[in-house]
Amino acid sequence: MQGEIVSAGTLLDADGRLREPGWARQPVFDTNLEQAATGLLGRWRVKRWDYYGIWTPKLFASATLADLGYAGLAFFYVVDLVNRRCVEHTVTRMLGRGVTLPRNSDAGDATYDDGKTRVAFRVFPGKRRLDVTDLMFDEGRGLRINVELDCPAAHESVVVATPIGGGGFYYNRKLNSLPARGSIAWGSRRVRVTPNVAVGQLDWGRGVWPYRSHWLWASATGFLIGGRKFGLNLGAGFSDSGSEMENAIFVQGRLHKLGVVHFDFEPEDYRRPWYFADDDGRVDLELQPTVERVARTNFGIVRSDVHQVFGRYSGHVVTDDGETIDIDDLAGFAEEHHARW
Image 1: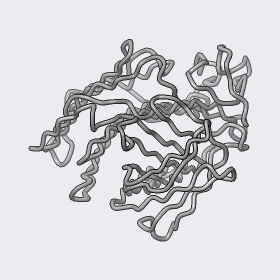
Image 2: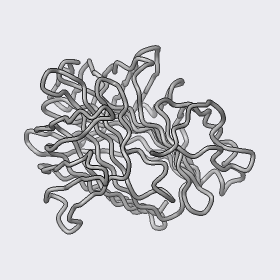
Image 3: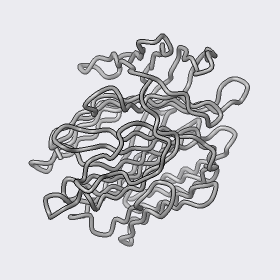
Image 4: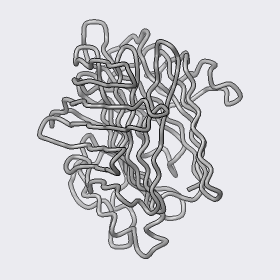
């Protein structure tokens, strides 16, 4: 099994390289990105984002604040899981002006406010609060997200510190299966978010990436038969090796670490089923897509191409304790992302 990090310290050494590659159950590192961001070009290579997703029985809503060095982004999308419709909106600010992101994932606020778009992601003891207003969303129909996520200190996450070719790195924390309460208003619709059926997730990323990058990500979260909270996080494509991987399942807030997981899908038709399996016989899953989200950005030398499919997972996984968990009709997504940034 890969090396688990249990000692606290700084993320980077004096030369801006990872001090200790590996994975952890909690954010043990202080994210000292100032060691990596030397000079103007160094600052442009640093990528930071806070991505939240909220699952309800009828829709998935996502809100992100990101600073890519040369540009700041506030972007939002809503996937109508019933009518199979996806709407999104992105606000871009040169050089990241107005976007504030915290140093670490377990404290501090992420904020943006230009009068028409206001975002605040706040961390409190035992919970996280998301407040979003985007008046320009869906051609002016508007989007409001006011949601609180239960996030007790003992709730485990998968944290990875991964070297990337050319002296770069990726430091990421995935939180999953967080009971959610509040509301999401999209145009004339207002969806009540209740913790017995709604859950949230966080993708918190910091790193220095190469100009060209490619990765795969799969995620699912919800409730098992009997009411246990369950989450799944799988990834591939961004590491120098298989020793620092984000593959994990979560049961009642406890992390069960996985090894290498293989993605099997058709890039010519992302709506065909996706299959996931590992080398240890602990993962055997199928995702049947129902909605495809395509997000393309082209600013000349800066490009991004995302294909993200939403649907239902089925199959089974095996925990660290040897328990086989059957998965049936669990909401989730998978994506392929090509970037030049």
